[in-house]
Amino acid sequence: MKRARFTEEQIIGVLKEQETGAKTADLARRHGVSEGTIYNWKAKYGGLEVSEAKRLRALQDENAKLKRLLAEAMLDNAGLKDLLSKNW
Image (cartoon, rainbow, N blue to C red):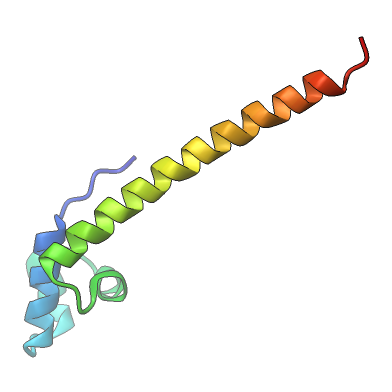
């Protein structure tokens, strides 16, 4: 998995600069990212504060963990059903 170059705090800082009136092209050049990246950040983090972004990340991690647990439980359940359906 690719490691992010910018933390949520840095991303929100860049977006705050954009909200104050800085041009997107100038921000992109200064921070070494494309304009598309800034627009993607705005779609994901637009209007969030740093604490909200951290909470969002924690919720996403927890959701991924729960999905993995559910998938494992369903796989175990399917295996048990297959085993019980066979005639001995």
